[in-house]
Image 1 (cartoon, rainbow, N blue to C red):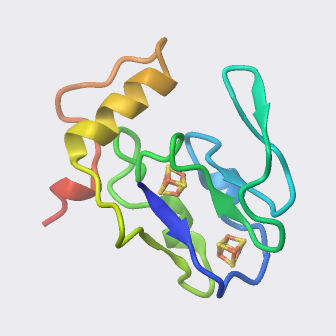
Image 2 (cartoon, rainbow, N blue to C red):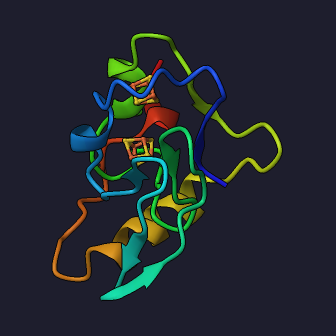
Image 3 (tube, rainbow, N blue to C red):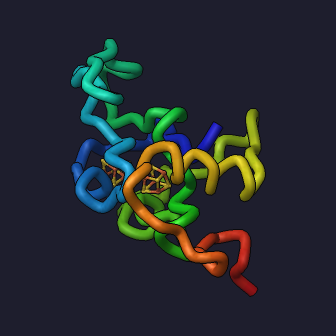
Length: 111
Ligand code: SF4
Ligand code: SF4
């Protein structure tokens, strides 16, 4: 289920423009996928759409929201871990026009 933003969010907005998948939205804002709008998942704090988050797999070797968050409230959802394979598949679905090399960046490859 991707990265999740916890209640510690202070609504600074730093994470939103960093996401390669536009998976982050301000509280109360509708989220969009394939031209369809959906109701906000959170009203008071920023939130991540699980169907759009790849934990930055395919783009970076670290979650970009977590890297910039001043209060470290972007964390892997402990209730629903996903495999690298599932996440790169999601990246391919979200970006059908993009090629992902075999050695695509991934937080799973660190260390
Ligand atoms: Fe976006 Fe990456 Fe954060 Fe997921 S982990 S919400 S893909 S910046
Ligand atoms: Fe909230 Fe952190 Fe994003 Fe700022 S960077 S809006 S504190 S999740």
